[in-house]
Amino acid sequence: MLKLIIADDERIIRESISTLIDWGSLGIELAGVCSDGIEAYNMILDECPDIVLTDIRMPGLSGLDLIERISQTDLSIQFVLLSGYGEFEYAKQAMRFRVHHYLLKPCNEEQIIESMKDVIQEHYHHRAFQDMKNRQRLLVSNLHHNLLSNIIHEGTFLSDHRAVPMDAYAGFMDFYNTSYELCFLHFLEESCLMETLEKVYAYMKREAPGIAVYSIYVKNNLLLFFESYHVSYDQMDSFFRTMAGQIGETNKVAPEYRRVSFSNLASLLETVISKVKRFGMIYFMNGLRAVPICNYKTVITRLEELTALLADGGGRQDVYLQDIKGILDGISTPDFLRQVGSTMIIRLTAEGNFHSPIDATEFLMKLNQQTDAEVLRSMLLEKIGSMVSRPAEGARNYSALIENVMQYVEENLANPNLTLKWIAENYLFMNVDYVSKRFIRETDQKFSNYLSNLRIQRARQLLSEGRGEIQWVAQQVGCGNNPQYFSQIFKKSTGLTPSAFVKKINGGQ
Image 1: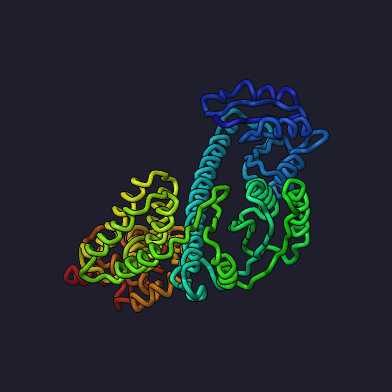
Image 2: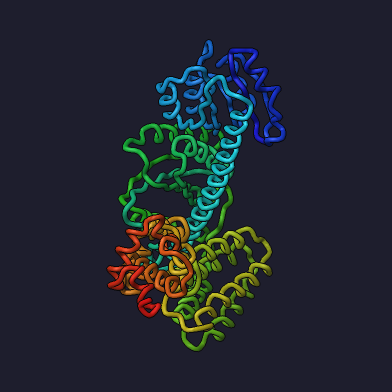
């Protein structure tokens, strides 16, 4: 149930509202009743309600002051303002804090209930939207972590670390246009690693929320890197140096801290790989979990060769898959199986012909949660087999990436606000510039042309079938409630207005 607090300095009003309405039937628990703004503020901090019904004019702390103070916290609360004063100025101030519900005294039970129903609906819509954003953020975070892990793998085992094919991953992450910071903590013993990471993550969550922090630990050295987010890093540098001094009390020596700025992620990764590749065991941290990058160079080199052969296609897929199975059967370490498996899945996905990025990311999340070597082998062989068999099921004119774009457009053609940017960022979780270039290269047309042509094609079909009025057809093909605009683009494409087209296909009748 949602929690509600009522605040009003008039006793008869707050008691009437609290007792006359059956809050339970609305799915609301009445957490408390307050006689002024200060009491309401304290109760909000204690109860963390979902809804607050408050008077505007109260002693000590007005309703607007209360809303302003709560807006500075991390609490997500829906406010309903109750006042006997109908001046527009109050409503204007309330709207500054995104308060949309404003009841004027005197108001009856029905008005309050209707307002509450609106607030409840808004609350659940907001919660559903936040849940979706959190799931998307988790998918993107896992994808980026796997991408970076695989790039570090490849760079470690290549004789020239600068030969890592970052362009193959450019559709999933920005390697060239965003600056990054790289922080070093030298002489950090393993016994202090987890405590140090906990402090770093807590600091970044507080000072730079939403900025992903990636960390590598190798031979008593901790490397941390993240997108640049400040002009000055004096405060952060001070935090690291203070923390290093505190660690020195339990460490044999105090760790040394330094920070280097990079113009882009690609140059940072080249530097990192050049520094860590000489070590036999590298740990790319996933939060507080150490994911080892093992120096099994021969095994990895052969698997990379087989993956490249699978990606190129040809008639020996079964032979390559059998070779992969033989190699995986010889690996008994779950961490190493996850490492080489992630590399193969991402590489096949990056080729664009075998799998969607979303499916691959979800599979990698499941793979990273598995600890049994036999199950891991089975999962990998089944997934790789299904990925490389997809193109043979029928002739495919486009890659899986472009097929996904086209399928999404087909299914959402009625959406008048459909854009490639939204599809790329919210459905594919990819860079829109990369998707746009791929779309043009594979289809020989811009996305806007494809979308417009598809809308006209669908409109011609619906009009030919006599499925509905012209206004209805316009809505079905994404022209919204604007038949005039629909008529203009239809005529530009066909040379006829929709009504003339219908008349023509009916034999001029």
